[in-house]
Image (tube, rainbow, N blue to C red):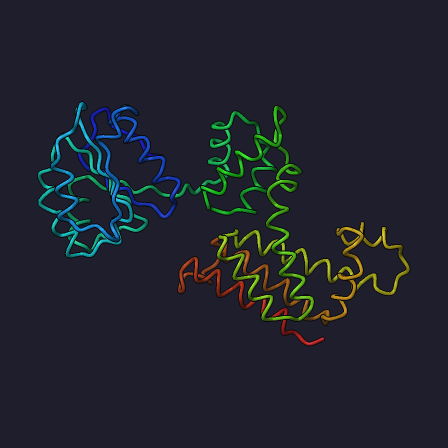
Length: 331
């Protein structure tokens, strides 16, 4: 959690993989530095991808107008060339006391001279995603004056994962949806899970049709939207269990309504699921469940499967292998 000292520092280098944490830290600094009516003349925002050090230095040395301080915000500071960053070192060694400079970085490379120097001067603020997401969700819910039970918290965490921005947005939506009542796991399923499950339904439908190209295209859409890898595995595992159950009742005489209840799907989806179940050998489904369990453990950090490739690439490779294995399996 970012906390400001009573006395403002002249420089803040904010580093985090999570945009929400950077945004909130920036807002806290800006609100402590200037009143709203002072910002029009005393706040400049530049993009590190396209801005040279010379321009930043010129802005930083400009005097404030009808205020004690001015603010310079550098977005994507970590994208600046090392040579440009090096030109800023003399400034951070002797900053203008009437300027508050805020650098925003999604990754800080402390091997670079600028970041190494900024770290030694105490100007780097690394904002880490909280390890205990459940506690963060409960705390975040207070922003929206809402009550949420722990089952709902766990479900929301599993569906969305560590994307704090999406978690916060989902909590805001749930607060509006639930009104004065406490948010339940059913509310999360109705409002949040349904949109993500529709995408995963497209994936399972493509897998059931043995359409590898379509399955991989849908998986790519899931990954691009940063949907939780753990949540995707959980929904794939549910699909595989439904296929196994469909195989087990294939020769039994049940009504469509009864099958829908047994399989946990809407009545209109029964015939499709029953047909898809005929496309898989039982041993393939059992192996898929084992693979999905391994993937779940890997994504939760309980084995070393993803350590070599890194988290994001490891999840992508693992999910791709799972989808291909299912879609390519023999009848």
